Length: 150
Image (cartoon, rainbow, N blue to C red; front, top):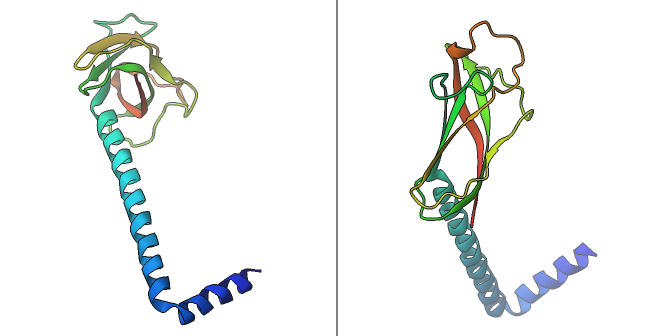
């Protein structure tokens, strides 16, 4: 079946080369325009998400022992946030492996944040792959941030 279609298309290129190449050019032009538009939409969405900063620090001064990680969400975008989700990475100083169990716990905050607003709160430690003597010496960071806008 596909050979028949290929034969018909090639025959049309031989019989009507100007019309076929013109049509092919229009098809390429339309595909490029659509692809460029979709790329631009994706790029602007990523820029807006990058304008939302989520940070984490071990802080017994601001948080209690059961939830020792202070999370700060800054909305530097021009849109209102309805939900932010993230995962936490825990590393020992000088090592690159993540001690947090992947996918075990997804953190989130549901506070509506207007543009240029900030939210802070405390969360518990992620489940670790192995025991650590001094948790306060771990380096915590954010990964897999996901933001939902109004």
